[in-house]
Length: 276
Image (cartoon, rainbow, N blue to C red; front, side, top):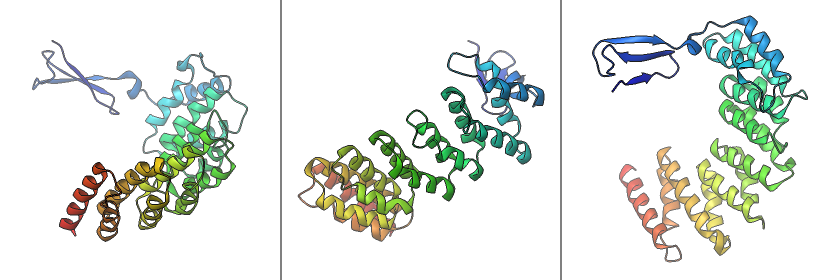
């Protein structure tokens, strides 16, 4: 059987001389798309096509932009130019498909420069998730602030929940206070998301909030709060905050907790104690 291994990001397929990928005699087969030279004319044509691009359009019409994002690796000036032009697309009346594409590309090469354009999409029903996709990958204080600022402006539970999840994924310590407040909301979806995010943030501050939440939260959210405490404690321990992790674990070994929580907390407590 002939075996072929396509390497990722290097533009070559490795094939054994006898068709066996394990052969000692390798031949390198170029990947035309990845090895394609950065074609400025093609990029210009693609940006022009992006203006009218929509679902159902031919992706090949804008493929040169995708290729350029890869081909300009190591060329800061060229990438900055691409980023600026892609961010500009987000401020036009281009289709959702075009803005979706722009967000994906910005997620690969974006910087703080793109944050204002992405922030403007965070409260839009159809594009908030793609704006968050890019902002999560850009990271940095500007991206986090944009999401924190958008949270109270979001008009639906779905949008708020998505932003909360992104803040948790990025472990944004500055959002602990607002997430703690949301954890007490009567809307269980928001409360669930906020509690879960506090666990992912995994800082001493979020641990303190969770210690209070797990004691006061309604019965139907107690398992969620306990799980969040376990996640938080694990992250604290991994970050070297063993003492705080042990305190959190100790709060979960009481008889008021389900057996699986007590067992997980005991195991975590012993592990943290060994490393301490």
